[in-house]
Image 1 (cartoon, one colour):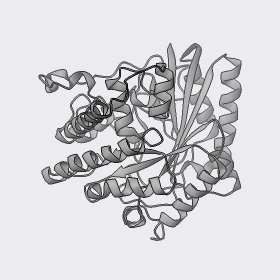
Image 2 (cartoon, helix red, strand yellow; image 1 turned 180 degrees about the vertical axis):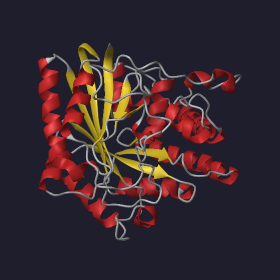
Image 3 (cartoon, one colour; image 1 turned 90 degrees about the horizontal axis):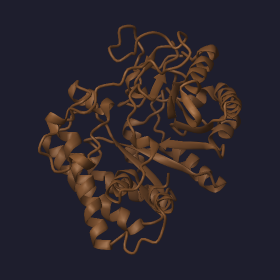
Length: 369
């Protein structure tokens, strides 16, 4: 049994946008049948220890195209976890363009950890994140961000960083900061081809972003540095930093096929090598899922940063190298740059001297969990 179990429901393959770098497969009107979703929730609950937590996430496609179904599943999960004496943590990633009343009701739930996908300035956002008809999405997404801020809803912005936008990463962060966003989660596009020049540009961008983070503390949270700050301060990390990859964390597609990570569902075609055996409809819990291979420490032998490295994301490793246990040069360079810059700023600003706060207070202040 698990103290926490992470379940992500890919609620639909459909989407109203056609982002050029999307890894979620073809956009088709294929929605998760409710019995499959209910069964997945029941099995996840049966995998949680008494008093533990079910982390339930909604993904897509665009999950808010199925806002009514999402609401029903949340209420079902709430009633079932309450009856079982468990806690429920809810999360959703949305493109921020579906805002009809039912969708808005879901987005603004006080118990929902909400992520809005936005890559920053309009020129960068509209380069890849366009509606199905070809129109850019920046103005619609920024309107949603302003509306959420006005409603007092806490959220974070998930920002995809690609080779063709990495040089503008600091400017994109500053743009969102000026718009009122205080929690930013940059994410590398690991499906893109990064050459040596791109990696060097990434390292320079990380150094510039670290200065923005320093200037914005304690109000501004940037995931790349907050996570390293917790590691360096030896404070408890966030659930999002743990990679369960099938063992303690699992994604379910509309077909009922199961995957170790929602980023690997794709078209959910038969024969997908990353699909786990069987169907979500077979079984009473997820405890049978075997422990996946960990990081291949031999590939990282001799690295001084090994103890504080988070190239343990099996999904990113698999995409980059075809081996869930082996990172590539991009992931290593990104990780090292983030750690070095965070350590430098900690030393220069003496963030934890004197430290009279509890670890919980410090984690809340700096990590915005």
